[in-house]
Length: 274
Image (cartoon, rainbow, N blue to C red):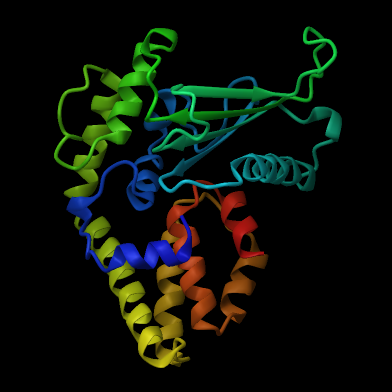
């Protein structure tokens, strides 16, 4: 989601109660529960028992460079592993999964799977371990994909009034229960309201003055909010603390806050603030 589009959405003054699974704030909150990461491989950024790594991205707005974005995410996963001491020969298989609220390629498929293949000999395995999957809520080939996947994607596509209906799938019911619990959580409601309020205030100030005024008191508030959003990740590197504490530009902070709200993994967030 682009920053401008995110700010335009704020004019609608959404509340926590208005959010569905496709809203980045709700998606990130729901997927902090490990149990919700076991459904249709919604691991956000995780590994399974075979050390395979998964990164998932919710895409509400159509992008023209999804292929290049998937390449970038794969490279970020590999770089994170190599920097942690892994040898390139030990790199695990990696899956980058996009959940698209549109048909990214126009063939009416619920799922588009990509991997490296030999053009001259299709049976020749390259074994680079890179897989990219696009899941589409606009699919039409229900007989060709698992029923559970179709139910989940219909749930993602649903608007607020439809999202609470029975999709006849236990995993979707689990997600619905998580969303209900989040909406009943006073701390989550305050966090979302503070995020929306700060972004709206700074957006309006920017429209009036042509830029966001640099105010020391706002920098501290923005810093606190950013760290609050980053709590969903297990451990933050010292270099990130230093980078945030050294930043004094409110415009940059507003971008980082948006990135933190929408990022599904720490590597994803770090890649966006470089």
